[in-house]
Image 1 (cartoon, helix red, strand yellow):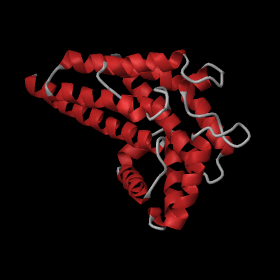
Image 2: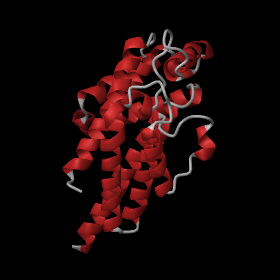
Image 3: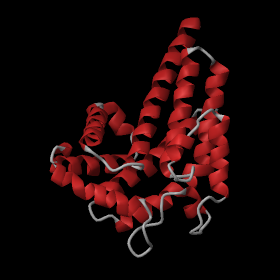
Length: 236
């Protein structure tokens, strides 16, 4: 029994670590324009997923569609080695994710803007997520750089933080702590990201001119729903 439980801890640790990496990569894609290094990282990650046929077959349609579209785009620009081909992505990043003006850009990717149906930032959602960050020891103050805490990048980064803490719990054999963190992850997805990321994805998809960020948004939407379902199935 001890060996079996230990094996389960190892599996849960590896799953949590893998989930943390997904959330971290998505977080980066929403906070800064892509460069050759980031696109190479993204390309290698997609290759590793597609190489695991058993895993790939389990993924829902939105994730598969997003991965395929990103992969096709990266192949067309040579995986980011040509700076002239990367430049349009920087322009689209600014236009789609900086909320420049209504006639030119979608609303900025803040939970409060999408959930509270208002142009006003720093709404109730903003303060709720900030309290969560502080409670679980994630100090993003030096990373905000004027951005509200409910920016999608920070919320994704928080999920990555929780997954890393979960992995540490399994590594130490702390069963109750591991389950507790899974509950926090489930609740944060349920109360925050699931409530607005689909809206963001649809908005980006309707205004994206290149197809790259609409694919990222579709992937993000699919991943959040998939991860939430997987956690819920464990009945934590």
